[in-house]
Length: 411
Ligand code: 17E
Ligand code: FE2
Image (cartoon, rainbow, N blue to C red):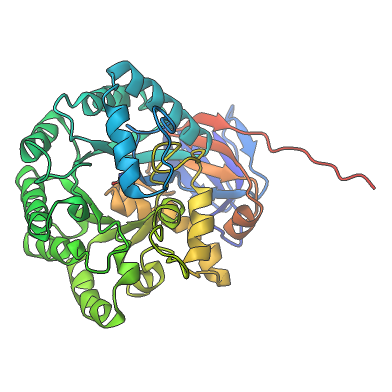
């Protein structure tokens, strides 16, 4: 198969992509079709590596309002609502919702997903169901699973035991939630435990870290220190880090040195944290999104995630990576021309680094033929005009096609 006139990652000139047996075998300015080779002309449209969702909760997806709505819009009421829904979980229910969510993602060109799965449940029903259903969904997406202790490791009965059981069942990454633990001591101990567990099993880590407006929430410094000392480094990701929005600048100045040394990754979730944070403020209301601009300027890897799709923490979401980038740029004031043009990296290459996808991710000869085509000439235009992903190719197979709407203005 030959795809012609692809504008790969905003390049000024177009190129042709040859796909054989699921792999990219050549990318060149001009390739002539081989005898009997099918050709699709991409007409100069933008081609990107597949989108990567670096942070979502697939176990909670599509449950908003069931059995109760989150009325205060706080993280904590979300956790209470979820605890009620958790009592009703079954494997069939989890699998059905995950299938629907992954199909939405697939339609929007997302082919890699990191999901947190709540393991503060003695039955671990959601974890087991997701580990099963991800095999069935391999044609659409690769799903990475984080053992996520929603109600705490030290503050939940047998929290440590459940974490280790989840790891033994096949979780890819270890989570934690230091800001939700009963005490600061528990917060530190939970991080020590989680880091030690990840090191012992050779796993990745992704911590819900300081998801609060409390400027005293200091999980991040402990996580970064352990990442450095245990040599876990870029295998570790700090998600949310909302408190960093509220830290005083003198403390951030000191913290930045450690963050750089530690080599950890960050994931910000602008849609969800602009909604959940600032809820105890009157006016002015804090934005609650971590310091993406400064982290990026310091050479630290930052990705953007959705966090939720219609669940107790977020009543919207449609499985596209576009909205998180769009809001993310606004709220972090990263609205320079180059910043907008290159912002696809938050949900492609940067997110791929979070997931440790390695060299097989990206458009180059020898790699799996996985890419998306957007109905625009570059990402600036794609983002501004909210264009669809018109084609998603995964390992050489077309997994989704969207025909853009045709509009006419009369007069
Ligand atoms: N759980 C949590 O602790 N924080 C979140 N943002 C979500 C679930 C979505
Ligand atoms: Fe989350």
